Image (cartoon, rainbow, N blue to C red):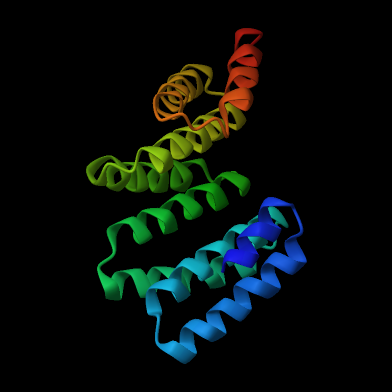
Length: 169
């Protein structure tokens, strides 16, 4: 999984997919169902980048099944966030909003500030696409505050750009 993650961060999707699939095979061999679920999520994310929605749904459903069996709330929150991003890309605002709310509730309860901040970012982006400026601004400001408070700079520049662009609308 780590090699897949490394290639993913370098935007080398095909290699990332290969290594995530290899990690799933290893997880099956050693009986590590949790790691298998995590790699299903990462595969879903990679296929989402490529807009291969059928593949995304396949991997999301497998990850969701695993995390339900394990009663792993954070794993399920990751699944819901991914479903929210998928719905956003498909312009299914209602489901996108629903899944972001579900993931946000879990991240907040579990104290997962990084994923909470990233989900607010994705949620804000969904509202930009939906042309709901006020809702977008609220979520992007929350994302900026959370990510800034934990020193996570991943989206801060993008958030600033999006907030500045909202001022023009």
